[in-house]
Structures are given as C-alpha cells and as structure tokens.
Image (cartoon, rainbow, N blue to C red):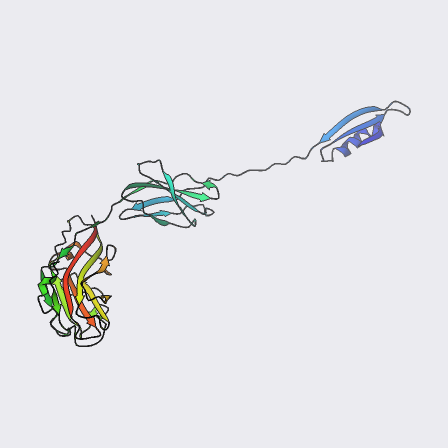
Length: 329
C-alpha cells in the first residue's frame, strides 16, 4: 500500500502502519513542499509470530515378567503403565540374553498372562508393549524349562478278586480270573453278567448293585522317584463275548488307595464276539483327579471292571488287562 502525505503526517502514518500484523511491505511517499519531487521515506514489514511446546512420550514395557515351565510355559506380567497400549509382542530365544524372535501377539493392553508351547528345552522370554507400529523396549527377561512327558510300558496285574457283595451274581470273573493277567488268548470268564437287564454300570463313582464286578491289582508301573506330575493313565482290556445279541457295555474304574475310593465310572460300548482290544483313558487323561507317586504302589493302585448287558446271561471272555502311565520326570 502506498500513501502520499506531508512531512507532518509521516509519524502518524508510520504509527498506523505498525498496527498491521499481516506479512506485508509498505512504502511511504512524501513531499516536503508542494511541487517538489516525491521521495520514498521508508519501507515497513511486519510478520505474524507463533510459539508453542511439543511434548514427547516413551512407550513403557510391562514389568514383572515371570515364566513357569512343564509340558508348556505359562507367562505372567504386570501390564504397561501406558494405558493407550493395545497389546504386547512376545519374544522367545534359546540363549540367555537373546537374540529373541517374535512368537506371539497378546491383546489387549490390559492382558497379564499367556502360554507358549515351544517344545523341550530351556527358553528365554521378553515382552514389548505395542501401539500401532510403535513398540517399547524389551521387558526384563524370564526363563523356563519345558520337559517332554514319558509313557511307561504296559504293566500287568498279579492279583484279582471279585466284588462279592451288591455286585450282580457276586462272583465277577468266576472262571480262571488270573488268566486276565497274561496276554495269551486264554480267558477269564464271567458266565452271567448280573441280575438285571440294565445296560448301566452305575452312576458317578457308584457301581450298579445288579452288575458283576472284578478287581485287579499288582501293577508294577516302574515310575521313577523323580516324577513331578502324572499326566495320564491308559487301561487296555482285551475282551470277547459269547454272543452279540442285545446291548453291552464294559466299564472301568481306578482306585488310588487299595479299593477304598474309586474314580468316576468310564463306560465303553462293545459288540464284537471275537477278542478285541478296548482302551480307557489316555496319555492326557488323569481320570478326574490329581495323582501322587505313592498311589502307584502295587497295593494302592487298583482297576475294577464292571460287566453290563441287556442280557443277564451274556458271557464275557477276558484275555488281558494292563495299564500304563504318562508322567513328567
């Protein structure tokens, strides 16, 4: 903007221009007297200035990372103090102090536990907090050892006895019962499976009073004294029948205290007359309880079989019973 003013007005014009804040150049043209050539007195520039403060933050890692081994690894921690974090990156290494590689993402940011199944060995873990593409520094390291389970060979019985009260005919496998302790195609026989046509072996841990029952024990499992946990028990029964008519079940229970207390009954439907192998439980089936090493002595650990058929005259031919144990050393 250009203005022509007399000398007396120069100061007034300059003062007015200084009140403008846009970034603009101004020239003031003035004449000292009428008719004189104009002269440029001054140019004036003003600019807008702005000030502010930029903040910074560091995404904090979780704290208190801990790891417990076994057949897998259980990890726990205290969540990051930065509540905007959306989760965590779990990193694992095989060398103390790293290097580590990412193995899992855990969400949300409030999470405080996870599991990992890396296989046998000693493993080292750290966590990083995460928000979008931003990750924190590593947490403190935690280590855990994973050990593979071991399964024993099948152990056979050495002693048998029929339940003789409230157990159907009260005679169990009345013919040659010890033959069930050898896998040789010679049979222990229950000629009549009970006194009713019910196909139920019982309810819960309580057996039916109308069905024949027989106990087997003396199983030398060979468990070492270093056992830290029992992870599963598998029972094998080799059995045939006199006929395939009707509906038939064979059921099993385990006792850990010499037959005083029993696990919940496990039933299996059977239909083959020829000798067939049936399996109860498994390498990861603890039959509904936590076992102690001392409960596997040859006198404490016992197996009970219950015969149930819609034909009370059904014949059961038992060749072999055995069991094996899966454990953590």
